[in-house]
Image (cartoon, one colour):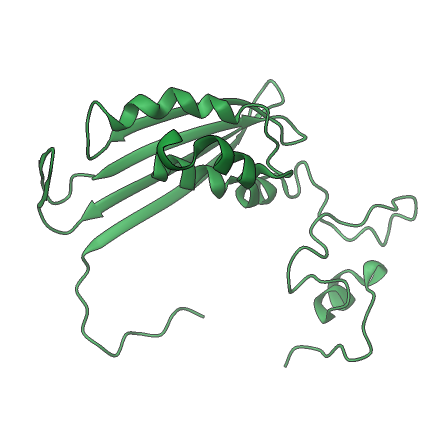
Length: 193
């Protein structure tokens, strides 16, 4: 269900868009291209000059390359539109410091340790922080088995997504319904209304 309509008149002032595209590569690695853009609905005056309406204030892309275990093996950053040209984009090469981290093991803390504050760009660092969940979605069904293994009696591995969120907790009704083999219902578990 979408958000309800606003009951108060509103005027759009700013749009931030974040997209992440995941690509499987011929060499067995995966690229995650994350992009953030910011646009104002009017001309804005910056210390570096006027940015006309419709021209991006930010247009930044971060590519993180991982192996099938989600180890970061490559990073590239590109700052095509920035508020301080000649300065903001100088940090792009530093994002190679993320190489060696693993998206599933303390990645966000590693990003914070290596790229927070003056060590990085706020926007590129924000893009890096959202990559773990995007990678899980991209890997689901291709790299990570997300199916109920009830029909495969030799598979004793619980599907990856179980017990990682509210809806798919092992003692919840969704797991009882969709993944009965792995369900551990609590006595007070109820079906959704």
